[in-house]
Length: 605
Ligand SMILES: [Zn+2]
Image (cartoon, rainbow, N blue to C red; front, side):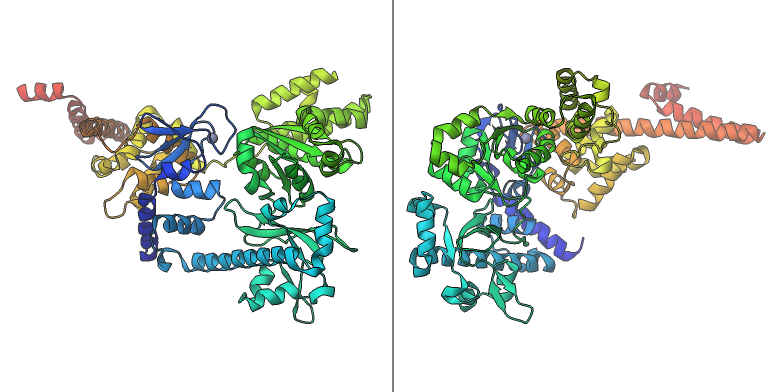
């Protein structure tokens, strides 16, 4: 362990110790005290009965439903989608701990500073755009456009809508120039996607003559903009390009603003456009999100899963809408989020529908939404027909969908579709083997996955060392390494040796150093079952240690005997009588050691 790593480790521990995990998680999730732990509904998977547990003694959380677990840093990173440096900075800030520069590696420091500058540029731009919309004479068209669409000022303010003027107003680099004047480096303005470099040098504004929506990450920082053009020219809708702080495959427009409503209603609506979202919000439908110019991705579905049980896709009935729905089926199935589809009447979008037919019409449409797999199936039948050829095509098109479900879901879907459709289940699943298997939610971390599969005694060793690492040396001295041959356990011993910094190894430290995935989940389960730990039962742990030590001694004897037997065989084959006699004597001695009873007999001889 080099010194900068140790320093980072120290600061990390200080921040962890100064953070109240129950309070931190309680800011986002309602927690109830049950025994020594706190429980609530898991933010990482959909559930109706709480299986998400927070252990204040050991400062970590674990979900018995989906297996997510971790400490305060993991929670910040997973729940708020932060990188480690940001999570550390945020928690250090809350705890009032000065984060010394050296707590981060130079690369992390640089990354953090660069991202901070991008957040700052975006925030400054949002304020400028907002001010433009309110004050610029050139924004008169934008203001009347919003008025025509029925967006009251109150909503313009709440969503911080803004306006980027066209070149007629302030030239081609109006915003870029203002941002530079306010002290932002042009390279950061470009990296944030607000300025575009000209081939012949210089920069021009990316957004011109557009109404702009700031896009927030889940910590409420502006990371990008979406804009609708006002005058001629295209494209009609445009988003900021991706940057180190904006990943459109992960973020959903509106999720930050609407997350509480979505959590309360346990249902999210997905619409295609920013104005659809805004219009619905104006009419009191606030559990809406919109992807940013992409179709729904698996990370999108996963982030929704933290807030709701059901997602309703509100799509146009056109081919693009269908394709988007079809593409998202595997994500919903593998993330176990119920999805439904509500098709809009021809020529309507949610914005026009809510304005022309009222909010009740939209609500009725949503309430009658079809389950996504059904919807896809019906649409395929409409498209291909039920001729033999049509059925073949449908079976082929359904394969990726079937492959995405896990065992039970797949079996259910196959049974459901084959009956509906008059095709044998075998034929329905015919290309099952050739189809790519579904991606598991978290890739198992190789050997670590096997803790739970270990033989009983070996598992006892793992459990014991997780809870009482202070006895690690005792077990090592008793020959732990010579007895243990299972690769998983060998790795675990190696791991304990590596993380043990000058003899101070606590369960908390082990937990936070374990690689994410199966190993951590296993440890979390053990910690939870052991209750609020705080090493209360000293006699119990000492007894357990003694039990394991005598087991180790016994195992070594067994190993030694087996080894002697092998040597005896070799000596017999070689005809070395003397050696055989010597080995037999040793084996006998070894056998005597087995029980105290034998020891006593020997003494009486
Ligand atoms: Zn969970």
